[in-house]
Length: 217
Image (cartoon, rainbow, N blue to C red; front, side, top):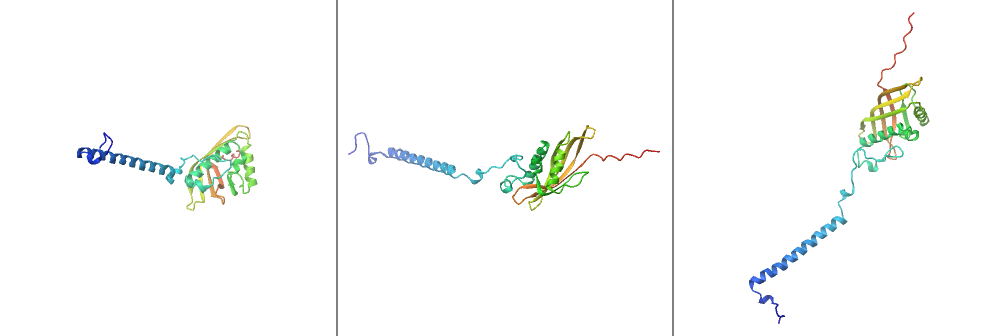
């Protein structure tokens, strides 16, 4: 016997049986879909795609360093060598403009050579330090340069950087002298993965002063 008011399935008419079982199947279907959706969401949260854990930096977003050079173990996956050297050279210019001697000479490799215009080459660390020390201490000193071209070797361990510079200094009479010109640097990747400048030279765009003409008799 069944409780009063309840019907057994056998007692239901065909019109009543179909909706009754349809509702049960539909409810099970909804529950199944919900379980699958929850499982997929949980999987995505627990096991995200590998590519989502890494983000590429925008150009020019390399963090400033307290010392020259940038390790390439990770940086090579973020930006090409050309972009890295472009940013390093720009940082170097800022160090020189701030008259920071230690940071300025830190961008050179141990075997670097500097070829200034109208003067002897500096081929030792001591000579390079003396060159920059005298330059930064000059009255009216102001210097900035901007890299305009960077080209790396196919091997990825050497590159050259060229660009333009602007330079100001007081002459012997105390008057400001303004100069502008171009420069060329050779950079090498060091054994520790850092990049350092191995050769540095620059020259003026201004015409050389003509020698004084002999006084006519």
